[in-house]
Every structure is written in C-alpha cells, then in structure tokens.
Image (cartoon, rainbow, N blue to C red; front, side, top):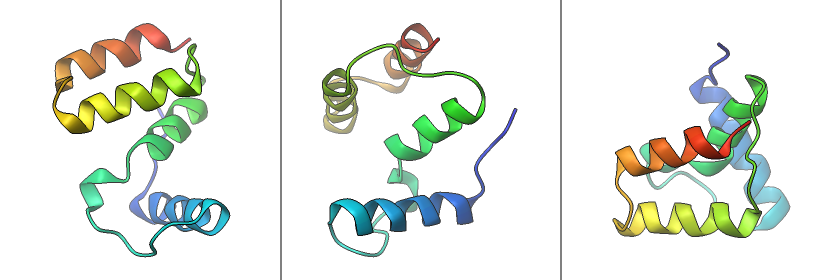
Length: 81
C-alpha cells in the first residue's frame, strides 16, 4: 500500500491552488481531503466509479455533517474499482 507523505499532500495542495485559484496556505491540516484521497486511491490501483458532481456532493455532505465517517467509508468502498 502506498501512502502519501505530508510533504506530498502539501505539494498537491500548492499545485491545486496555483492551477485553480484560492487562498494560499493551509487552514486545517486535517482537511486537505479530496485530492489527497483520490491520489491515494490512484496510487493504489483504485478509481472512483462515479461522476465528479457526485463526488463533490458527497464531500459537501461530509463537511456539513449530513454524512458521517462510517457512511463515507462505506461510500468510498462501494464507488471505487
């Protein structure tokens, strides 16, 4: 299993900010989420089998507390191939 180091996650964050805009810096190290998760999955041979819109909706539901950690974990397991 290949995990991302904190320096890789921070570099990914910097690249995303430079390509798509947004505030520089890290507000919350525990919240550098979707891009790091998707990179982790790809590095380990899995990809999401759902639309970007669905992924965005799930991430927003997670942040809003509509979806809890167990539901999110189950969703990831069932939407990756």
